[in-house]
Every structure is written in C-alpha cells, then in structure tokens.
Amino acid sequence: MDHVPSGWFRVCGVEEISKDGPHTFERFGIRLAVTLDAACEPSVRVLATEDAAGCPHCACGELGNIPYKRGRVLPACTRAGIVLAWYDHGGLKPAWVPSPVEWDPTLLIDAVSLRSVFDSTPETVLLNYVDMRHFCSVHGNIVLPRVAVNYCGHCIEVVTFLDGPNGDGRMRTKIEGPGLIYQRWRRVINMVFPIPLCPHRLEFVCWIIPTEPFDSPERERDFRNYVERASIGMKEDIAIWHHQRLPEITAYCVEPEIKKLRDWYRSLVPG
Image 1 (spheres, rainbow, N blue to C red):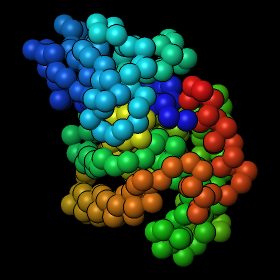
Image 2: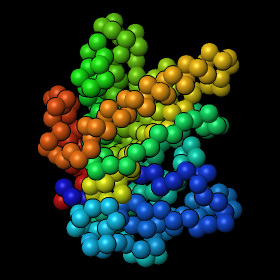
Image 3: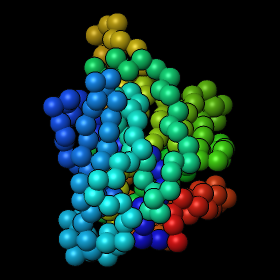
C-alpha cells in the first residue's frame, strides 16, 4: 500500500497564516496554497504536484499519479485553530466531516507543541493508540494497561485503564480517520496529527493542551511535568515508528484489535 489513506489531515495552524496570504505548505506530495477569507474561513488550493522524480521526501515513485491538478481547491475546515484539508487519492469528496471540538479553543494559549519528521506511515502511529500494552515494554510502566476498543465507521474509540487493576484512571482516545487523534487524560488534552508528506514520510505534531486555566503555580507545574514526560515518551515511540513498514510492526501488537485496525486502515487506502 504505497498511497496516502483517505482522511482529514492537518495542513497548518491558523496562527501560521494570515489574510495577506497565500501561504504555501507541502502535504501528500502536493504544494498547497492556504488563504483565509474575510470570515477567517480557510481555502486550500493546489499549487503544484511533484512528479515521481521530484518527490522531496523519498523515492516512493507514486506522486506522479496524484489526481490533484494545479488550481484544484481541496475541502477544508478549521477545528480548534487548526486548518484541516481532505485528501483522497482518487479525488473523491469527503466521506465524513470532522467533529466539533468540545472544549474552549482559548486554552491553546497555554498549549505546548511537539513535532518530529521521520520515515513512517499514519498506521504506525495509530497502532500505539489502539494497543496501549506497549506502555510496559517501551515506556517502563509496571502495570499492564487494559484496553477497550470500539470501531464506529471512520472513527475508533479507545479507553485505556492506566491506574492499576481497578481501572480508577481512564485515558479516552478518539481516532477520527487516519489524521486526527484526540486524547483526554485527567486535566490534559492531546491533539495528535500524523501528517503524510508523501506515502512513506510523516510529520508528527502533538498539541498538549490544559483542560482549564492554571489556577495555581502547582497546577502549572503539574502540566509542565506532564509535557516533559510526554516529550520523552514521544521520542521512545518515534524510535519504534521510524523506518518501519507493514507487516513489520508486530512487536507490541495483540490480536484481535490490531487485526481490526489494519482492516479498517486498509479500507481507507486505495489499491
């Protein structure tokens, strides 16, 4: 499967663009121009498609077949200050619309962004969020988390029980297609975006957002400590994701949920 899966993907943050645009970004092997109209609604337009020999990320040999021609406008929307664009290798219209954000976007003022670029696919990231049992092998957790997974069309809901066998702590994860992951754990929200630069090159962006304003120095210190731990965990995960290809990603995969995820993911990838 050497194509980008169908889904909504992050193009940029609203703070990265202005009404004086356009501003250019490379996604899916396509050079995109992003502008904002008078109502601050985004427009995402194709500037150019790299041919196979001109792919700036890898020798995937697929980019020349992308059906998006210069001037085409991609479906786009904003969620929590993030510009999202719909991509489908066959040029089909969106199969769903991203859910509204259920929290105050002003909390982004205190958010922290973690980023990395490496050779991988969105599926390698999704595997981590479905099979949390890698927490012990990779991140050194003592207690093996229990995981409950529910597949609902384009969406996957994961509940991970982290605080021991009684399940008194729950991390809730919503995977909305291959490019949007929302995760809530106590007083923190993680917005995770696996962004295909081409079929085998991925930009990984994680926004860590407090669920409420800091009401004390202790509350802010707890948040900063969480960010530090999350940064370490992200580096540990990327060491696994980097350069991996299917079906090599098996070290922490537990059936049947991983089989379901792979079947779900394949349904989004043409061919």
